[in-house]
Amino acid sequence: MRFLLTNDDGIYAKGLNALYKELSKEADCLIVAPEIEQSAVGHAITIARPLMVRRATKNDVFLGYAVCGTPADCVKIGITELSDKPVDMVVSGINRGGNAGINVLYSGTVSAATEGAILGFPSMAVSLDTHKEADFTYAAKFARKMTRLILRNLKQFRGSAINVNIPCIPREKIKGVVVVRQAQGNIVETFEKRVDPRENIYYWFAKESQSARKQKDTDVGALADGFITLTPIQFDLTRHDLIKTLQDVVHKNIS
Image (tube, rainbow, N blue to C red):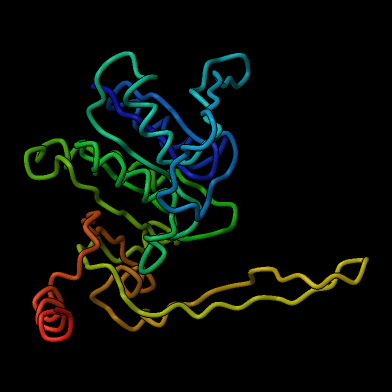
């Protein structure tokens, strides 16, 4: 059994290390991850320059392959070129910071998992809902449970991705595990206006909040309430409910 592990926080990230240690008890794990942090790059891929790949080591021990590219790049090249045997599953994470609601579109972590799904592999993205230093041990153990669940139901989950978000609270305070939809509420973003020593004005992204926190049946709302959230996601962005409406409007107005 071979798992391909990646992330968007970079190959030396603590979350990826915790994931590797735990999932290595379940399967042979190969790390193919960005050389440097690639947070919020979405599903970008590299086409205008070569992908540089190096063997990364830690304490003189082979760690995995560091790619000068995006998380989606890592999945593509990991599966097609770097893995010396067939990959059975793609796992992305553990991200430092939640990836729920509209953030799913921006997330490099989630995009790596959806790239795995596009290529036909069962995939999972795992995120811990904090931007502070944290202990990833429990999140890694839960990720291992999820790999077992997905592989036991391979026929249903092949070619799909499961987005997992874990609240960063003591384990005994986690209220349970829920399967919920992705929230669709708006994000309220703020920027700090600053001036550099040469009196040039610049802006620094400060914080965001999602209005969907009150929607209890969504990933954002349930995560805020202390639940681990599971959301099956796909890469079809079609508004199927608007196809007929658009057809009618076009037929009436465009000849």
